[in-house]
Image (cartoon, rainbow, N blue to C red):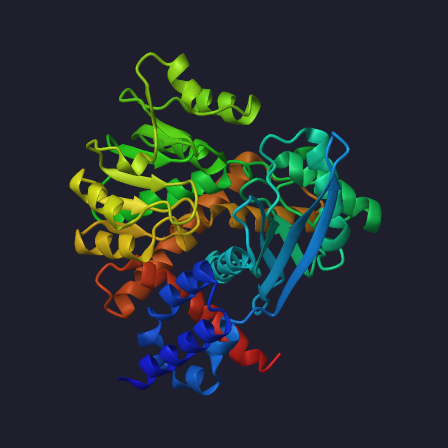
Length: 448
């Protein structure tokens, strides 16, 4: 066993000993660490400084209670978290997630991924994540407002424009960011750089809503082009019907592809004529309805309950845009059987490790989440720049910057893949490219 491999194993053993129940966190960390062996072999100074042990331990993990009152007068208490993982290259940056599945393990996995994702953007932002096990689904605007105000009462102690700048994630859209910003402003005065994903009337950026979905397609287009192929005429299976999926469908259609599915937690719709993203927008963003309503409005569409990844149909490219671990080994096998040549992740860690191994085994070219879905945080950082300048850039300016950033992320991943002879393993390439920048910054700054 090489020195690098034994060092990685010792760090992984320590994580299992310290955090034995944090399954999501372990999955995210081990996937990254296992890909860093060639880097550590070339940089023994990283081992000497015990850099990995520092990288996998958050600089700060905050847990707090969030009491709030529902419209019927009942009092409730949820848990809130903010994990400030790494600030080596800039202030903490990462979203807030509101969903019953949120735990410390989930927040740590997301925060760890955010370190490398933010590094890949080339922008000066560190990694963090936060959220609560509160479920905004089915709650009134007043209930969501009261929760957000209570959540921010504690969170505001730990964030600031040059310290930690949260954004949205699952369950946190424009409505929630507005309530959170209003609560922060009341306690600290108007500081429009403290949150991103804000409304356009109080410091938000054009193209922020579209950023993750558009960015996913800019990355995917670069990946496909690198294989000597094109998106034109490709049939695409998309999961999800939220922000990422909706704008991924829009941009894929604009680039000449045909998206044939989208889904929510109940089931999925299949439309062989191509999903109409405007109808999905109306159902999910305006009416806050369920995706099955799409089939009621579009004659060519069919609705089915269950996972879209269990649906057997021929297609060329998969874009999972729903949630973590939505694709398992068996479903990955079906993706290969159905003829998909490419898979790029719009959600955070939607493929489990066995699924990823199945992609590699079947020759599916894989674009990992930390690279493919970095468009959201990239435009969040561009929103921070606009706030600092007291300026608002045009949609075209932001979109062009996003396009360049996403192509650059693929190029960095591809360069690392070639440098370390990884055989088109763009997941390992992204891990290495993101890690090398953070590692050099950490080494330069010493034990801080």
